[in-house]
Amino acid sequence: MSAEQNPTRPDDDHTVSVLTRTRTLCGQCSDVVGVDGAAVAVFASDTSRDLVYATDITAERIDELEFTLGEGPGLAAYRSSVRELHPDLTDPATTTRWPMFAPEILDLGVRAVFAFPLRMFNGARIGVLELYHTQPGRLDAQHYRAAANYAAALGPIVVEELDPSRHPTVIDPTLSPRGKVHVAAGMAAVQLRVSPTDALARLRAMAFAQHRRITVIAQDIITARLRFRPEEPGGN
Image (cartoon, rainbow, N blue to C red; front, side):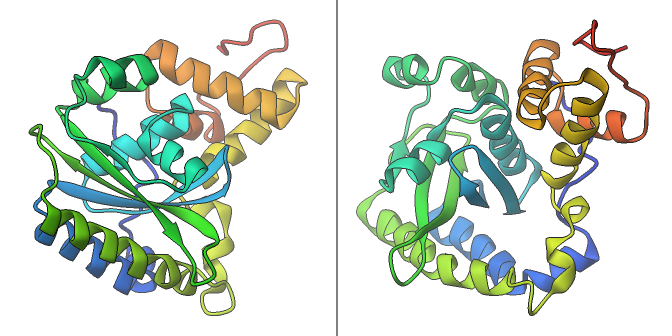
């Protein structure tokens, strides 16, 4: 997918002030584990996720690819509650398992991904911590334990920092990276006369087919640069 500017990257002053400990732990984790970047995403369901924080644009792009394509190690780790460790993304087992995700992430220059489920103290799943490396290679025992410990710490902290009773504006959907995508899907649903779920599926398909970022397409819809007609699912 193209390297278009993401209009919803979560690094504005408001997000920084709300997610202080999440940002700090992600940065520390990346340094201590010896990877090139980290991201935290929270899930409302298997098909609904939002990026909370990413240390860099590549970590953000990995999360967006999984959201757009509906496959990848982060989603698998959340669904199974099992860590997904992929030290070489060119491994045929990986490319076969995720036939759309694997070539896209390799195009970003990423060669290894490690995804750790985030849980609350009671074991409830709430999201994933995803780490990436531009060189293939396994996590040694020390780095693996460190990543697992950061994931264990991040679960409750992320939930606390996103608590709307502490930060009411966090629940504003336009402030989150995926929020504008869902707003755009709602607008497209009205224009196409389909359900919001079907409209979102069409936006994902468009992003993949056109090699564009789904957040950029969403911005085009919201600003009326892109509109749909019922007989023209591709928009005009």
